[in-house]
Amino acid sequence: MQIKVENLSKTFSPGMPYETRALSDINCEIGSGEFVAIIGHTGSGKTTLVQHIAGLVQPDSGRVTATLDDGTETVISEKGKAAFAVRRRVGIVFQYPEYQLFEETVLKDVCFGPKNQGLDQEAQEARAKEALRLVGLDPDVVGESSPFELSGGQKRRVAIAGVLAVEPELLILDEPTAGLDPKGHDDILDMIDRVKEDKSLSIVLVSHNMDDVAAYADKVIVMNAGTVVMEGTPEYVYCERGSELKDIGLDLPAGPAFLERLREGGLDVDIRKLGFEETAGEIVRALKAKRGKKTEKNAEQQNS
Amino acid sequence: MAEDAIISFKNVSFSYLQEEDGSAPVEKLALDDVSFDIQRGSFVAIVGSNGSGKSTLAKHMNALLLPTSGSVIVEGIDTITASDEAPWELRKKIGMVFQNPDNQLVSSIVEDDVAFGPENIGMPPEEIRKRVDESLKMVDMYEHRRKGPHLLSGGQKQRVAIAGVIAMDPDCVVFDEPTAMLDPRGRREIMAIIRKLHDQGDTVILITHFMEEAAEADRIIVMDQGKIAADAAPAEIFSKEDLGVLNVPFAVKLSAALRKAGFDIPAGTVTEEKLAEFLCR
Ligand SMILES: Nc1ncnc2c1ncn2[C@@H]1O[C@H](COP(=O)(O)OP(=O)(O)OP(=O)(O)O)[C@@H](O)[C@H]1O
Ligand SMILES: Nc1ncnc2c1ncn2[C@@H]1O[C@H](COP(=O)(O)OP(=O)(O)OP(=O)(O)O)[C@@H](O)[C@H]1O
Ligand SMILES: [Mg+2]
Ligand SMILES: [Mg+2]
Image 1 (cartoon, chains in turn cyan, blue):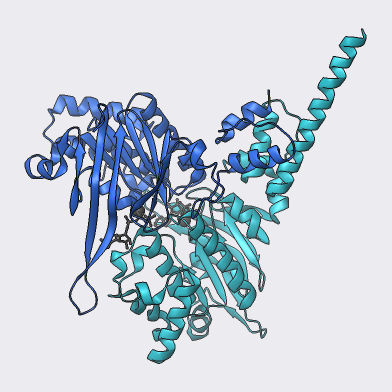
Image 2: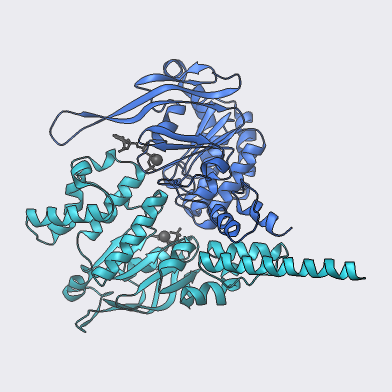
């Protein structure tokens, strides 16, 4: 599924003292099979934007168009049957989804979506069990537990499984790894990347974790105060326009952030590196150059 | 119990009663014979996988949960006795800050929220005023004292929640994943407050999944399936080859790569600050 967002604007509580212009004139695209990350600090409009993409909120103006892989175009930001049918193919994992668990057992909770799609019980459970395994939970162990008896991170996994079980074509995840342990964090991201490949999904990931964004995204959309201020590959956003990113109060991934710290400390490094290997390589280069200079200086002193 | 221990766990086990669909409730062992002391004034991080028992452990520290067997001693008093006789006394000594800032704020004005705890323990009004102002200043939220919490960012709400806890003048503050829901800026704000509390002599316990945060503590306790799997200084914890479900802080990983390339990085370099300092010499 492909998404086109055009001139989208949204104001909450218009005319009230706390009127908030959450989105102003947003334009962006999500390609079919693309992994798009949305970054921006708290309150910048990320959640509001993805809620529009999922068709959960009506815009004040502008529109969201979905193009299915067979070429049919549907404006999903409008009311109506056609829009509704396409919206069902969009799965969204909400920010803090654990607050939406409500069934008596984990298995029933994950079956909820497939059940709504009209699958029979056997098919529902097969889907639910597959989804639970995908998020690293054993259906035989937790399936019959109440979702309320799980730890925070376990609840998060159940909530993600619930969305995967409906087999969406566009999967939106709003901060899916908050509260997960390091292994769970990596597992979920690898899992997202894998289902993206296996099921040729399009992915929208809202994240505060710049390392994840740098590692997984094909494209990054940067939001600030309700507008899109930058859009491009991780290399472009973090390396070419890193200083602008910092100006709006956002962080760089761990590699370039550390390189910048070294540069401030007086080490002559090029901060435009993204991955761990590149970062380490650049530090090695700079340290060797520094060592070389020192030896030169010593030699000069000895000569004179 | 060691002379200067503020909290002491002695062979603590705890089981939740889980209601399975239809059938009789079953016991779920969440803490399995856990023993350790927390030294007064120390900064201890607790890490471990989801469901390993960290929150359950934390809730034992102020008697939100009581051990099924074994005992928890806080300031020399058994929590079972304390929860019977003076539960507020205990909550006052051991403050708790949780993950979700939205669930912790109860009032519609920031300063009322901070005053909630002190009012509940019957602190005199002048004292409350003073403590509320001091706490809000400590977390740098004093200018926002008249605002409604719904107008604050996640990080700001979390700072208000912390102010509410420190207004009770606790001896120890337990943070259960206080930064999990915050953006990087919010995380930095909270970590700065945690450092400040520790510097001024408070005991701080930090439950976290961020190894960079844990690396700042004096000591790390690793939980695994209700048991303590490791308990040591960060440098030692992160020097192990196989960290299981943990991951290595960036500075540790980078130090290893640089050593491999022939640079002599001092052992025990676990924070980016220390590593940068060394590299820039
Ligand atoms: N239902 C609502 N009513 C009124 N204002 C709202 C509503 N939802 C969001 N807002 C406001 O719109 C703005 C954008 O909020 P949004 O939740 O989209 O931000 P975000 O980028 O997702 O932030 P975070 O990183 O904290 O999740 C904020 O100022 C927020 O307070
Ligand atoms: N209210 C409850 N009723 C029954 N079982 C529970 C309850 N709360 C937690 N458990 C179980 O106890 C174990 C420990 O849970 P706990 O919340 O202490 O883990 P945690 O280490 O804090 O995990 P996380 O990192 O996900 O927050 C888990 O197996 C969980 O399923
Ligand atoms: Mg959001
Ligand atoms: Mg927990």
